[in-house]
Every structure is written in structure tokens, then in C-alpha cells.
Image (cartoon, rainbow, N blue to C red; front, side):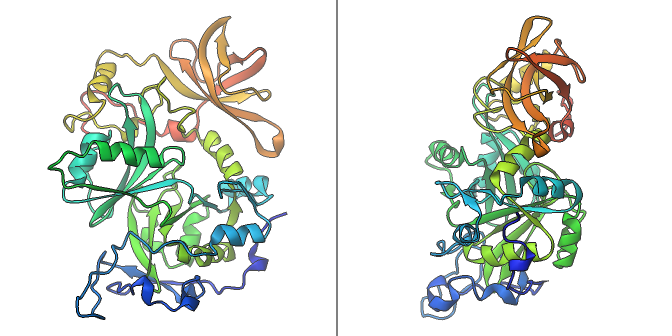
Length: 430
């Protein structure tokens, strides 16, 4: 049974329009009847500015930054979904709509929408924000411009992986999307690296924002129907700003696990109307259980599984997020040495499994231990199992058979996320 289908929608679809300037109204001035999301049905407007000034008082206070939002409303999207029958965890994560197979089918043949509001979001502002992130992560931030986006990796000084972050370069800040397991810890880590003279501010804005992604081949068609066709065909990470009656929303190209699809960052007060509109346009809702399956099918590494102190960023296959020529940054020396001396001893693979087995199980070839399984999920309709695991480079290759655990047979397969990564050399210009 699908919960929150188009049959349950009572809100008229919203349309995206593009005026010249956003003039947000201070949150406290909204009547209580307009603070519950009910007034957001009249349309989306494009913003060309992050700030505007309020002239309603003698102090002429600046409005809130565009990429921040008011506090969450009392009755938020999760409450509405739970009331409609969605399964919600104790942590407030939407786990399932009792339609996991239908949602995964939509990824192949239609469009699915996923609430990833439990993922971490960090706002990095201040005059030195670009140089600061340039020095703290693997990507070349100095090459990026406003309206662009990129994946980067947080690593230890020895290039062990902490997390992948997707960065949106905005006019007055950089917004980072990180995994739910690391949001708070990465924000605190960044604060520790701010020196006295650095003009950098770090804010965890996870609770002040909501975040959805669209996945599937009909994502672009849905974008066109919502008057967002200008973003279709733009590079991965490109994003534009809109408003829902003054409430901010940013729409970007890509969806965490793929360079296709879309991402939407917004005020929690706008989330329910946006969600219902996406469903009314044919998007199938997907919960976090199906999303975890999709993550493994796609091959995107995750913290505490594929991204740990055991494995470095090159073994994790995150080549597209690494720069070798941008100057000194955390982990650079190790990364450069691994490439120069061909020191990457193992790599991450997708594994088609004959049955379920526990993450942490050994991977064996010809009676020799050659790696470790890091993730395992059931496939569609429970007829197959798919895993991710690290295997020594010279021990096996695509299509080879491995034994996982005591007796589970597996076949090494390429997975889309890792297949898109392009290995670098010291002559790379990225």
C-alpha cells in the first residue's frame, strides 16, 4: 500500500515563477495562521539575492540570510506523514511508506522523492570560508563559483575517510550536506580548526532546514512541469534559489547518490506543501529503508561502513572529489604518495550475493582472505542480496567469484557511483 498518494492531495500544485528580488518578511510578523505552511500554495519565486532589508522599523534591520530559515513549525512534515500511516523511527526518520519495491521501481522507470532531512547540513560563512574549506577537504574550492556545487571529502591527516560532503557555493556562505551520522561531529571538528584571525563561522542548520531529493529518469520531466527547466542539463551541483511566499528554497542538480535528479533545500515551514506538490506530479514517496538499499545498489560509500579509519579515500574510490594540484590540505601528502608509488592496495566493489550475510564478514578468494564486506541489503522483492566490500586489488576483478563469510557465494560487480569515478595521476589538473 502506498501512503500519501496523489489521491490524498488537497493542496493545489505550486508553480515556480522568477521575479527579480526576494523580500522575505521577518518570521515574527507572520500571523499564527500563516506559520503552519498553509499559505505556501500561491507559488514559488526565484531569488537573485541572498539578503534584503526590512524597512518596517527605525533600525532598518537586515533580513535573515537567504540560506537560513525560521525555526521548525510545531506540526511538521514528519507529523503529517506519520498521521497518514508512514512508519517513523524514534529519531523522527521516515523509514517506510510500505511501498519499498514500488519506490525502487520508480528509480528505474519514473521518479521517487525522498525526505533526507535527517542528513546533516552545515553553513560555513565569513570572508575566509572558501580558503578554509579549501584547506580542510579534498576538493579545489578556489575553482568554484557562486551557483556551482561539488563533492568533497573530509579525511584525517593520514587520508582515512570521515565523510563525503556535497557543497553548494552561495553568495554569502557555503552550504554542506553531510551524512546523518557525521553532521554534528564535522561541525565541531571544523570549529576546532578555525584560528584566531580566521574570518569563518560554522553553523549546524540541520534543524532549521528540510531536504528532499528526486531520483529517477523522469526527474527532469517533473522539473519541467514545475517551471524549473532552466536547471535541466546544468552541471552536477549547479543550483538556483527560489521562494515560497518569502520562504527560501534552493534547487540543485544531482541527488547525493547520482549526478542526475535534483535536490531541494528549504524551510521546514514550506516542506509539506513542496512534498505534496511533488507527489501530485507523480513522484513516488520513498522511505529511508528503501534509500539504504538504493545507496548500496548505487555503490555510494557511507560513514561507519565504507568510510572508516580502516580505509583511505583512494581505496574508497572517491577520485572525483580529490585535487592534487591545489596546494596543501589535510591528507594531501598521504594521497599524493599513494598515487606516486601506486600504493592503493585494495578497492571498493559491489558484490552480488547468493544470500544474506553480516557486514564485517571476510571475503575469501582461493582460500585466502582478501577483504571485508561492509554493507549488505536485500534486493527488490527479496529475491537477491547486494553488498559492498573492500577487496585487494590483485586478488580479484570484475566478474570474479568470491566467498563471503563461511559459505555465501558472491560476484564482484561495478556499481554506478564508483564506476563514474576517474582515477587521478600526479599530472592531473584538478
